[in-house]
Amino acid sequence: MHISILCLCLLLSCLFHSSAHLTHTFNQISHAPPGTQACTLDIKKFHCTCPVLPSHKPWLVIQGMSDNFFINHAHPFGSTCTSSNAGMIVNAVVDIWRAEGVFPVPKYEDDLKAFQFPSASGPFIEGEFRYDYDQSEMLNRIASLGVPWHDKKGDERFSFMTTFIGFLWDIPKKLVSLPEGKRNKFHQRILQFLIDFEGWPCHLHDVEKIHGSLCHITFIYLDGHSHLPSLSNFASTFCSDEFLMKYPPHSLITNLKWWLIKLSLPGISCSLHPLGPLSDLGLYVDASTSWGIRIIISDEWAAFQLSLSWKIEGRDICWLEMVAIELLICFLEGRGIHNAYLLVHSDNQGTIGTLDKGRSSNIHLNLTVCHTHIALTMISVIIKPVYIESHTNPADPISHREPGPAGKQMFPPFKLPDELSSCFLHA
Image (cartoon, rainbow, N blue to C red):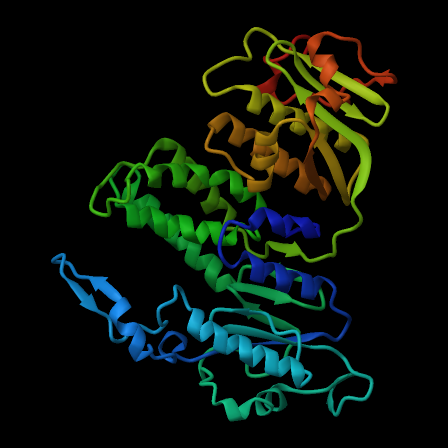
């Protein structure tokens, strides 16, 4: 199964530290010319190759289980956080490579991804392409640095398909997917959680292990964003108490069963095509709790008046503003618009933030986000929501019973979703 996604879909996955590195790799492959190859390298014992400076030792203190404090003589990073010391050395490796003509080389911790592009007169020949270096030549150019490369991890040579940051990248086809081994691993992990904890209490670690894995793979499974809040919300109720045990709520079990089905499908991939130009079709949305929703597409407009039954616990102005986005996508689909990158104007900052994150802790809002992302994926449309002040939003007056803007009124070329049909009059 192949899901065609435009370039901006990557931005929906920026929930974790590796997102910038995914972005770099994504951009390199999406713009790569024919013949581009890549090679992954792994540094052996990355976090143990930089000993701590003696002058730093007094400041590197750890707390033991008995509340005693000790100097950490084996701390690998020096007096700076994360992997800064080793990271600075790897940065130097990348800089030297670049000066030697080997670039680009994106890196993430101890993993480096080197690319090579076809060259008109390169001495290294593979098939119809020539290259300026191969793996041996690339490593030879920095051999004097003595980098301890891992002999069991990474690639043995440059190739058209490579694994990096847990994903399989097909450069000629411009596709990225979850390796089958990892798909099966995550599928089994969720299945085991359901077997162990559906109807039984679990620890915080059990939830965090599942949540971390699923956050990572939303890079491929974009519609999975809206199936994560139940896990993060549940994890927050532990208040960092790793010994506390709690029963998983029904919403979490339901979302994990959704993920179980999703991960049972092999061959799902994400297309790495460059994002086209941003188009402004005159798309504006607005909502008010006193009247309803309004949508503008160029010189046409549509309005949906609220019924008395719309207001239930959890539904508020933010939910209405998101519903306006969902209905706008329905109009775009009815017009046959697809494979586009579109500007959408909204005067609600919460809506813009929720769309950027791809999820919400509010169950009603999160469900609407889920529907919106599915609809966007089906027509391969990416939207860029931007803020517009209410007094300049041409869609704003409609919700306050003022006349619609100049132009003709649009009537929905679709049936309102079942969960929305009772929320509006004449639906």
